[in-house]
Length: 154
Image (cartoon, rainbow, N blue to C red):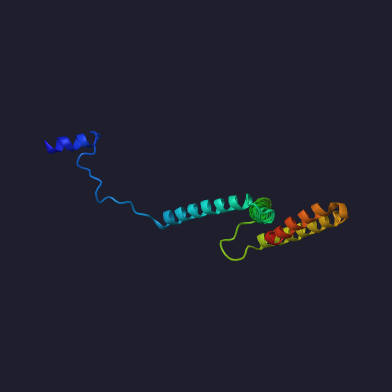
């Protein structure tokens, strides 16, 4: 009779005799790291939200400048990797160059160097074209974006 009542207590859904006592879930280091990163991202977002809506205009201005620089660097890294990989894939396919197993990848180093010099020349040309006083805002944007992205392309 005790077994019948045990099933009734659980609503009779098939957990008779399968108590949950002593049953634990193992937490891996990846799960723990992911949970701490999620909490960190949430806290960071709350802090940024507070700073963006702060009463002092200077704090708001510097917060937006910091966010702008962060996004610019992130996009530069992503675009640099994408463009370099695309050029290398096209070059390897058209010239029949095999990817090395280990060691220095000379074609990739050469492409990265050429891209760095091309980007540097493009930024300097844009800043030269925007040298007149009426283009001050655009010149600043070009120098900031280009100056931050040129080292990443090399």
